[in-house]
Amino acid sequence: MAELQSLNTVPHAIQTVALATLIFAVCVFFTQINFYAQFRKIPAYAGNPGSSKKRQTAYLESARKFYEDGYKQFSNSVYRMAGTETLETVVVPPAFLPELRRQPDDVLSFPHAVNETMETKYTKLDTNEPLGMKTIKADLTPALARLNPTICVEVDEAMKAEMPACDDWTNVSIYMTLVRIIAKVSGRVFVGPELCRNQDYLDAGINYTMELIAAQREIKKVRPMLRPFLAPRLPEVKRLRKREEEAKVLLEPIVQARLDALKKPGFEKPDDMLQWFINRGEGADLHKLAKLQLGVIFAAIHTTSLTVTNIMYTLAVMPEYFKPLRDEIASVMAAHGGVITSKALQEMVKLDSYMKEVTRFYPAGITSFSRKVMKGFYLSNGQYLPAGVSIEVPSAAIYQDDANYPNPEKFDGFRFSELRKQNSVAAHARNQFVTTNEQNLGFGYGAHACPGRFFAANEIKMILARAILEYEWKNEDGSMERYPNLEQGRQTAPDPRKLLSFKKVKA
Ligand code: HEM
Ligand SMILES: *[C@@H]1O[C@H](CO)[C@@H](O)[C@H](O)[C@H]1NC(C)=O
Ligand SMILES: *[C@@H]1O[C@H](CO)[C@@H](O)[C@H](O)[C@H]1NC(C)=O
Ligand SMILES: *[C@@H]1O[C@H](CO)[C@@H](O)[C@H](O)[C@H]1NC(C)=O
Image (cartoon, rainbow, N blue to C red; front, top):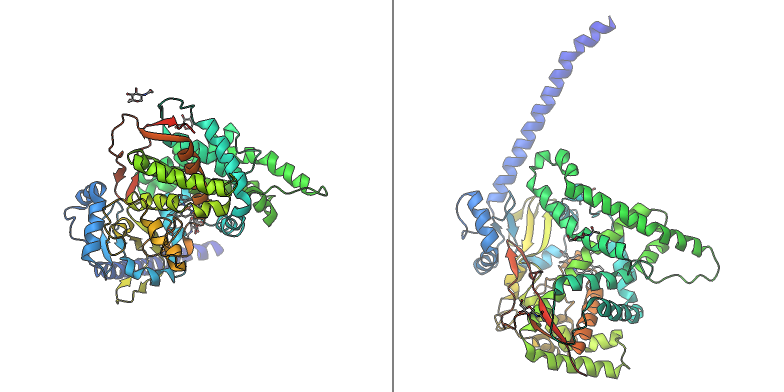
């Protein structure tokens, strides 16, 4: 009897499931229709016609030009741009930035955008954990005045160890040299003196970043539907799991020793990020500590190395800048007893200006402020951004607008130090390397703007100060043409394979 009943219920169950599926499908269908109806109301950039494949190829070659065109055509309207993604991204002119910065993460999401580009489901780069951000903002940045002397010593040591003698002109693969210097210097602040010069730590940290990017690239090649099955099996993805394990193995004895030492009276706590995490009660969770460390390494090392490489490639073909920069650095240091304090760093305004002008000319990307729309909303001009859309801001075009930067096509290393001479608080605030606002988007914008930029600025200045005082440099073949950056789609970076020729200056 019971059997009969259960048999009898089967068709009902099937009917119910079928009905539910149908209702679900209809809902999805109408949501999709609705999405595309709203999405198509956004005007499209017309300068890249053709089939979707053709447009993607053209985008890879000419994205810079497309965003510059779009910037001129659409100043008070968002528009669609065919990039490499299946769904077009929506480009937002800078006029809308102030209203966008007010949108919370559940409307306009930074972590979700990172999730998508970095394939975090499989690469496991941690975007959930706000602790990294919190520690950088609350512990690192306020500690810089205290830490600068330590950072400065590490910069000197790392440069001595990594740069060849250069008594005569010597070719140096500067990008990889900088990566190692910066891994050591940031490592001093992230994990402390026990590990920052440890070869295994340096290898793991440096390679993790490159391997993460390689893994992300391989995952993107797999069809989205197959990714849950195939992505974890990719060798590039498995390598990341190995690095996570290595990081734990490296951290374990140090964390244990520090936890033990905490129990002893009079133990002076180390002053580094690993300890700040422990102080915040995270000492017991090695897995989390390892992920946090890998997260900041990813955010910090190559970004900083690429920025310094861009600056050094630019200086190599502008020898006239060496003397005024060297004079400034020498006189500021003399005024501070030879120590690069926070005050000394602030006084290096020409150096700060040069760094900033290089990032204006050679920004880290053609676009910035990548965000994902989680809940649809209206802009002040009445346009609607439906949920599911990715947005970006054309930062390279903003840097070439003469309304923001007079004679934008001219490289003027002291553009910003001249502006700061106006000596108003606003002139100082708006013209620094670390400034983020509607015209300065290299470190992002709004609540998620790079929290590490104050540390990065100090580290970069210390490296350049030491380099400019001690060396002069030029292109390896002596040519006076700046090494062109590599560009593909919205990505742009200095060519890491180029050599610069360095020579010690006689004091
Ligand atoms: C010159 C070097 C650097 C550049 C160009 C850079 C650039 C950026 C950019 C463009 C963003 C995204 C911001 C946005 O979309 O609004 C970002 C975020 C971030 N950066 Fe940096 N960065 C640099 C160095 C560093 C360093 C040294 C650290 C760590 C100490 C760091 C930690 C972070 C973190 C944790 C985030 C994510 C913020 C969040 O989740 O809200 N960055 N960075
Ligand atoms: C980002 O991805 C992680 C891992 O897949 C997930 O746990 C998290 O909820 C995602 N965050 C957002 C904002 O989508
Ligand atoms: C540096 O490289 C250039 C170009 O490859 C070469 O001509 C030059 O001899 C090299 N200099 C030294 C000192 O090795
Ligand atoms: C790190 O990467 C470099 C370059 O890809 C490679 O030569 C080196 O063997 C790697 N090191 C480790 C420890 O995996």
